[in-house]
Structure formats: structure tokens, C-alpha cells
Image (cartoon, rainbow, N blue to C red):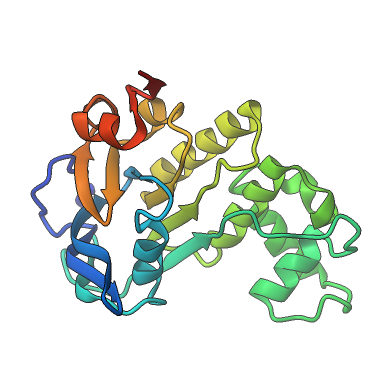
Length: 253
């Protein structure tokens, strides 16, 4: 079996690669995204950054197939052939009432088996959910109420849910929002482990730049169009980043 090769450059070899070409979105006369080009390869973590209203959510919706666009989005598998992209999606800060009695097991039962939460889960289903949670080392959370989870615990549960069935790509919308510093490091360590273990492409939006240099392979600065793309050091140290955020290297000027 040939090893999968990870490519860090901008040239696309069409091997296990998400390729976005000349993607544009308009809302009437308003141009939300213009001529966006983006390549992601297996095993990469790509951070999508930009100010509010820059088009990050619009780009995610386009990749998910929830937003009309012009341009092309294609995915090539390890054999080099174009194939359907399977995406695991972790939304931003879903709201669960603290008093909600639904457990993590109930949540998985509804999502992966379409089994009503009020029915007692079978032993086989419980074992399957435990296997899913094991991907993020969260088996101990299986009987916890979802509304009682901390921000970091909830993100791990949602991440485990996004990995069932196993996707080609993970998209996380502001996964570090509402998570404390310890939880951020734990979550990013999980993503780092998962991308290497399953050779997944991971695209995440974030307003927290403190973790980028350690974990991200590439950073894309978006403001309706791609202003700058490259390594974390290249983007965070760029004039474009300084102009958008009035910061350089992730610190205020």
C-alpha cells in the first residue's frame, strides 16, 4: 500500500485533497465572497480567521452544501479520483438547557440510530456510543446530562458525534469559544491526535490566535476574499493581518 503524502505547498497534486476554486457568493448586490481559492490536504489543520462579517460562515455553508455559490469545490481521495466529500460538522456553541434531562447517550441514540430518546438504549447501542466517545477519550461522559457539561466537555462530545460515521473532513465553527485555557489545549490536542490517526482534513474558524502556531499547518485570512494564506508565522506576521486586526503576531500593536 502506498503511503499518503502530505503536501504543504500551494500546488495541488489531487491526492486526498479538498480544492476550492474561484468561489464567489452574492446576496443580491452584496458580494459576500469573491474568488476564493483554497487547497486542503489530508492530515492538515487549517485555521480560517477574519473579522466578524468577513464571510467565514458563508464559506462554511458553501462547503456544507447549504449555500449557493459560483466556482468549484472538489475532493480527491487517496487514489487521486474525484469523489463525494463526507463532512463531520461541529457547530458553534449549541444551546442545551441546564435542566434538560437528555444524556450524552440519549443524544447519540437520537443522532446515530434515529431511536427516540425516551426508549431505553440497547446494550449494542451503548457499546457503539462508547466506541465513538473513545475517539476523544470521553467515555466517562456517556451518562452525563448534556446541559451539565462544561464548554470543553460539550465540544468533545460534539466532536465524537461528528466522527460517526468517519468523515473525510472535519469542520469546526469557533470550537474554542466558551472554553477555558486548559480546555482549549485539551481540545486542540484531541484534534491533533485525530488528524494524524485518521488522516483527516480539519478546517476550523477561530478568533483565538494563541493556539495557531502550535497546532495549525496553515492559516487563511479572509475578508470577502483571501487576503493572505500561509503558515501561522507568515499570516500572523503579515501586513494584511496587522491592518485587519491592528495586531502583529497575535499581539496588539
